[in-house]
Amino acid sequence: MDSTQLLKGVLDLAVLAVVDDEDGYGYDVVRRLRVAGLEDVGDASVYGTLRRLYAAGALTSYVVASESGPHRKYYGITPVGRAELKRQVDDWAHFSEAVGRLLHTTTGSTR
Image (cartoon, rainbow, N blue to C red; front, side):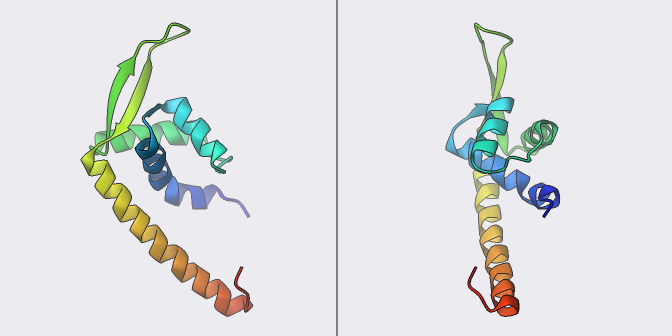
């Protein structure tokens, strides 16, 4: 199965969850998503999501100097972002339960 479309639908949720766990800069967020199992996530998609969530007030940002390269722009979650994360977690739970019921009904297994 091509996970690209599934990933698009949950990228905001995944990015908010990663940043809620710990502030991070763009590539750090990409790396943490991949380590968590979202290997197909694209750099550009994550950077675009970070910018969009920042513009929406869900994330804050700050710059940290780096001795080994350019300064890094870190993102942290805001109260607006935490509220959005909670809403999306609730939506995901409802959606995944519904799909799980459908799969159980059509296949007769508990997968």
